[in-house]
Image (cartoon, rainbow, N blue to C red; front, side, top):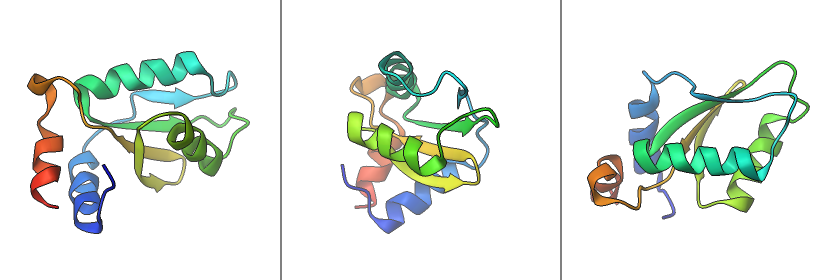
Length: 104
């Protein structure tokens, strides 16, 4: 799903009250971390992650790594925080993705 401007604005508004639930630290990026990220998004669809001060990667590197290796889309970056979106595959968790689809 390629997000349009209106859809991204909606998701940013929905993510405003969320706290980061994942972080990138000195262990860096790996497939295990991506699998955990994907699992969380399958239930929530929208999450925030942050980069710790000890992280060797930049925000742009993390964004590129996530988008190149998964179907996850980075909706927004603010400082060291990224907002991620991925439609859930199970219908019972598809709340935001249905609302986003209506905005298309």
